[in-house]
Image 1 (cartoon, rainbow, N blue to C red):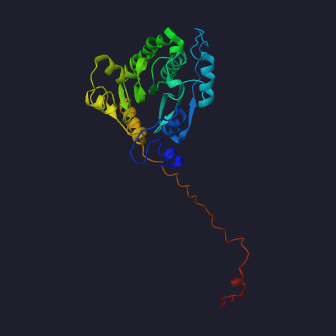
Image 2 (cartoon, rainbow, N blue to C red):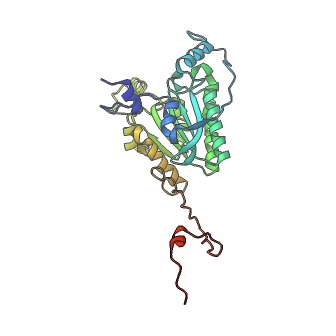
Image 3 (cartoon, rainbow, N blue to C red):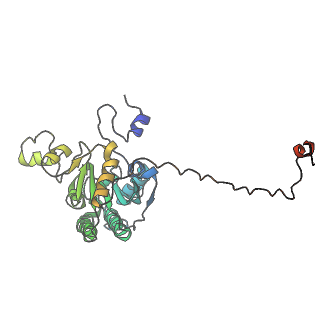
Length: 291
């Protein structure tokens, strides 16, 4: 049995088996940034429902339902802040918002994050979580693949690190574009990372896939990832890698003690005895004999 409070304190990771559950970008940023403090970067809003798309529901109605369920306006959050006193720009996808699908807003968000990173001369850390392109935006969503690739190239030309943390799941056009273009690729344990899912592949080749196929550990063994890191240790690992890529010294662990107050020395000038009033002892002292 899991208690919500314990699960929340453990960053939505099961305390018994270590299974990594979904986490919102705001909760992730609260655990990532120093003191949980960050500043959001405004993302230009795209044209709403450009294709007038309708399936069982109208696209605007699906958007309103997702906004009401998540409390967010779209599927990606971009922010600036510090991790281990290292300034960064971070972007995170929200899988609970229409499967984190990549639409025009996500493309605008990655471009805004890249531009802000170049302007501030900071590395960009991106947390991917998506089922792929957003079908309600058709070809316009697929156009975000080259757009985000160009945005990542801006970082590389500026000599800035681009670190990607792949979370469960990262699939489709997201995997085929910005999610696999990082300088360093880190994944959370058990994350599904692929272009076409295992069920589609099995139905196509009519064969049973190996155990753990397309999971983070499988991709690490086959050279697709650099690290697989548990969510609780991810912050310290990102601090270490970021500072190494920036050629900075290791981060200071803990806060330095406050400086001690300076001791003030009070100088007292000796009082002149010529005009000083006689003390009671002088008054009672007998006068010396004079011959």
